[in-house]
Length: 237
Image 1 (cartoon, rainbow, N blue to C red):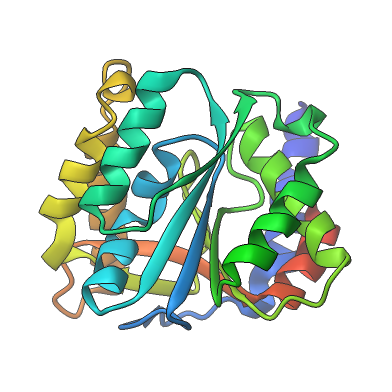
Image 2 (spheres, helix red, strand yellow):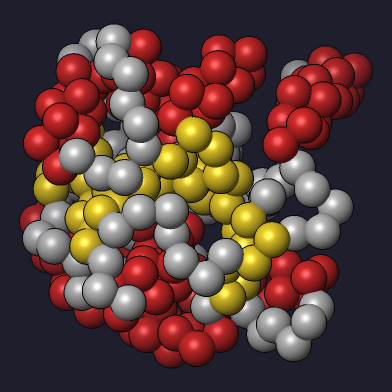
């Protein structure tokens, strides 16, 4: 990709999402609903991207369940179950598509719609539109396709994994970091290739420093209604 095209793409992204951004980032104490569904392209995304928010949510009496869309074997599935237990989530759901195949799965939008209709979440977590993995972007496209068929009312919290996002909401995770660290530690198969614990903590420390006000660690989200998120996605994907 040429630098001109790359820079124009980044500029278009910022111009598109800028109306939803605020200079002074809001720190949210509670999610916008009691029942949350986490859309995770791979087992570990749900912990790295939003594990702290989930720990706070379940500690406050909320319910949450992860939908793991891909699988590369029983080891990672077992790790996902262990991570969900540590975060006090309901038993995770698995679609078992091959890793790096979601953009080829024509049935994925219908699978998502089926899960959404069954779980009836008030909050849906999903990787941000342009997160740097084909499965992450494909999952967003599938979610937009599912939302085009029905007027869902849930609130979207888009989370980062491979790229920092432009957030409009922060959640203080300083008090639950050790629990999040333990949940990431459930994924020993993934930690063998990359230090996701340091990666996650470093990003959380950066945004806490940006916000100040005594924050130690903060997870970041791009929060919108389902309808607003779908409208934005059509311009970007």
